[in-house]
Length: 296
Ligand code: GDP
Ligand code: MG
Ligand code: K
Image 1 (cartoon, rainbow, N blue to C red):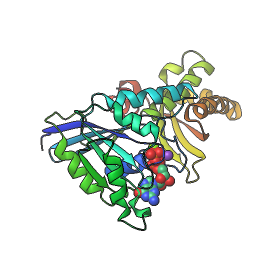
Image 2 (cartoon, rainbow, N blue to C red):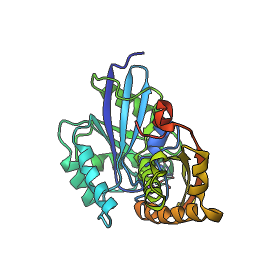
Image 3 (cartoon, rainbow, N blue to C red):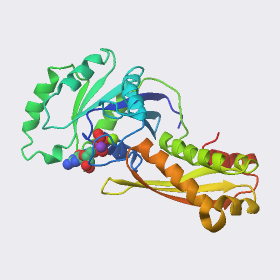
């Protein structure tokens, strides 16, 4: 079916209200990092939802907070950047929270013309559902919301109704991304670049150009304190693998230690990094592989 409607949707809200969980529920697979501690979402993750004649492109912004690092700075900026030029905003709150100054301020910053949906998440924690009326009355004083949608992202309750509401709001527009694309995970590309950079600096001159790094897995453990990363280093010749691995694995170990330090400071948590080396002859000339590796 040809895409006739499309638009960009920003998901905003305080840390821990369930923005990533909601995005995952919409897309039906785990792409954003969800955890009980605030600020786990370090990058603006673009989720793409394509159904029938509509394509929605989601921007999962980090919560606003005082930036402590370069990355934090970027995140704070991305909240503002995301709010201009979107077709709809999902303003996610928890039912037990009255508006905080930061939220009031942010709502004030949103243009009058952009549709803002008040998404009341975590309604499963409400023992008494009639409490919702009070929450809605309270928040509605701050803005004329296009719709108010109570949901439980975790229990996948009300998410379909929210999607239907969103789809009805999308303007006419083209297909921006292929049908099968769920996300462009910028975080993975940055991690791959860090590993490649260490290889470039530690290895002798002629090999590095024949090297590509692919992140096969990035998974946050349930405890939220550690991220496992599996990465494959592709080289062009069998003879190169020995050089990359080094005597007794010494070179690969060095690359791993240096890369891990950078990745940990980028992500702000502990990382368990696993590196493999594989040969892929002529990978540079093969379009399909390049695409898989994120180089197109
Ligand atoms: P974010 O910081 O806004 O992206 O929030 P997350 O999606 O990372 O979720 C923060 C915490 O809230 C996690 O522990 C989630 O499991 C939890 N959570 C998210 N949605 C719901 C929900 O609908 N109900 C309940 N009870 N917990 C939720
Ligand atoms: Mg998040
Ligand atoms: K979180």
